[in-house]
Amino acid sequence: MKRPIIGLTLDSEPAGGWSKLPWYALRQNYFSAVIEAGGLPVALPHAPELAADYLGALDGLLVTGGAFDVDPALWGREPLHPKATLKPGRTDFEIAATRAALERDMPVLGICGGQQLLAVALGGTLIQHIPDELPSEIPHEQPNPRTEPGHDIEVAPGSLLARLTGRARMAVNSAHHQAVRDVPDGVVVNARAPDGLVEGIEAPRHRFALGVQWHPEYGVDPADPLILRGFVEACRG
Image (cartoon, rainbow, N blue to C red; front, side, top):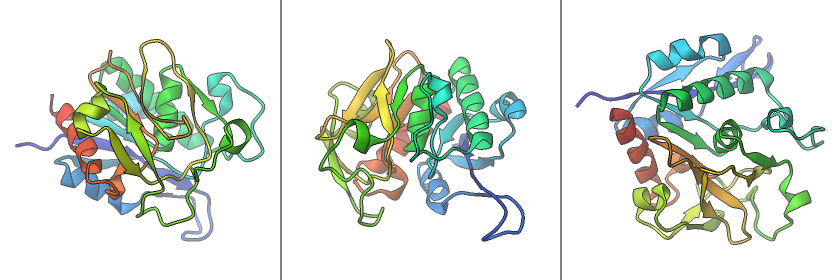
């Protein structure tokens, strides 16, 4: 069976460190998880003006996470929180590609920061800094390795996430200081942490538009690979 082509958004770094010139980067397990799920992953450079051209060659879009935040100007909240970090070039491309994919009803999976960007693209808003707005004993920026769970989540019955995983609860890794605050009509919160923080969203009006706040590419929970598998299967359609 032909593998659907899945575009993965890249992170970007300025000159210095690994290279004397600006460079792109992405953890290998994003790619290996898509391959394991049956997809053919390709990397997408940050060229917003080419977003439609990229999508014309893809079957699905995976918006990855990273150590940065979505510009609050995109969702009507300013000023920028002191703890927030922006990567305008990356966000410009990701928001253009995500909105274009949604318009085409192309399957979209947002992971961690990618879920937050998907929420904004769908018309939602974000919490700029969790400790300021929802103080909690749950370590949403967990101190233990990302290869281990940080806390559990509850999955909403009847949601796409519940259908994909067959689970009412999951163990997840957690590496974020922002989160989804509000979602518009037509967007469903499909998972929450024990403190009530939004951990997953989906838009049933689209063929497949799913966001998860954790990193299923690590496979911390046995149900994590089922999320990637369901996404790839949707891309076959």
